[in-house]
Length: 109
Image 1: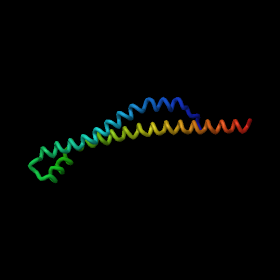
Image 2 (image 1 turned 180 degrees about the vertical axis):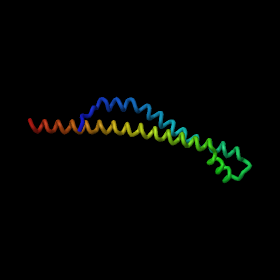
Image 3 (image 1 turned 90 degrees about the vertical axis):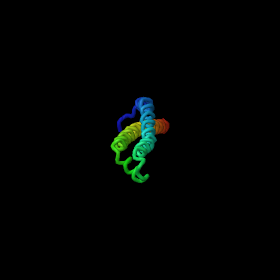
Image 4 (image 1 turned 120 degrees about the vertical axis):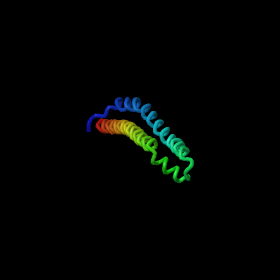
C-alpha cells in the first residue's frame, strides 16, 4: 500500500468542504425551486383542469431544463461528498496503521 499523507487528506477536507457546502446549497435550492417553477407554468395554463396543467408543466422545456440542472447539481454534490469521504477514510487508515506500528514497536522492545 502506498504511504498515506494525512496532511494532504486534511488539506483535501479543508479545500473541499466549502465547495461541498456550496454544491449542496445549490442542489437544495434547485429542488425547492422546482416546485415554484411547476406552479408558475401551471398558472400559465389556468384555463385547463389541474391534471392538464400539471401535464403541461412537466412537459414544458423550462421544467425539463431545470431538471437537467438539478441532475448536474446532484452529480457535483455527490462527487464532492465522496472526495470528503475518501479523505476521511485515508486519515482513518493512516491512524490505524500508526496505532499498529506503535503496537509492533512496543512488542519488539
